[in-house]
Length: 454
Image (cartoon, rainbow, N blue to C red; front, side, top):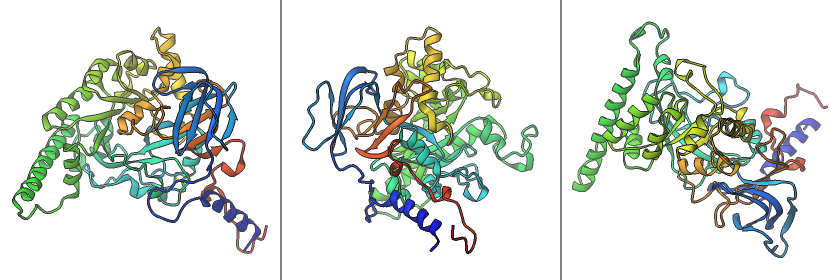
């Protein structure tokens, strides 16, 4: 064994040393002791900002939050003076693992382009857990992510919710009990993905070629899903032979009965409104519109329908349907009382989502939209948790919730802020001051030539 290979192997084993052998949802048991962080500024994820607060982590949960919290015997006590504590960041829209770094053809598993309807595809089956992007996201304070299929299909397939922890398998990363999602898409991307020349409608007979064609296929598939779900129920009630199993329709039927949440790529306000009307017709609901460039135009409707909007701080103009993007988008949805969220959609921007939220917050405040930092942090934690159906488990610093917590060296809305320590389920999974708790992927360890002993 070469010296370099031995060193690389040791680094890998350091990452995986704490993972148990069973196949459930193991977490790296790095920190056995209780942890008390004292005298920090706390953004609780529910809209509050608290000065000189303590946060106690115990048994994988937030045990207490407030002033002068007593330290249990044997607890690790961290001085948080001048520092900030927040819930871990939740990215509701990521392709990490499926579009792994380095971005080469052999690692691509974001979009399954073999048909416009691919509801049977599961994003988790394409995830590379050794993607270096996971460790870099952890260094940016991200503790939970939803991994989605791409937007080239009208029905792209099932998403999966993961804890951002070092792992050997995707099962090790799964957020236990979190529901799967269904990725859907509307607008330009699914029309031009199957049309080599978007200016020549119907090229090669591929569908869809127009937005009207998109909706025709939506309605066709939801009609089939209703018939399939009814046939399954009827066969079960009568004890007769069920219809032949159809994995596409099975996923859509699970949406109709509420066990799978719809996350839909959609930019234009008028199109989002049409999708919500269609959902009412077929008896399902959209959990969130992603990208939602024009969410501000229908912020009141999104609020009344209980639909979240996952947005960027300032991306716009990359296609025709994104030309009405404004940096006040998130602030206007917040002002209307809606569920606003920041999202990355990229393995680089996920590393500084706190700064992306800070840009959106600054744009709102500078335009006279009253949003506090406490309210803005909900865009990063409790609102995404709500959209994923895990708000009773994570997303805020409330006693009894998972101890998914970030200690920042300064105000996380500062461009200079860095995540100092990151806890997932109370375990210290990233520590900027401890090289042993910085993730290492074998993709980053390099290769040696035959016979290279150095």
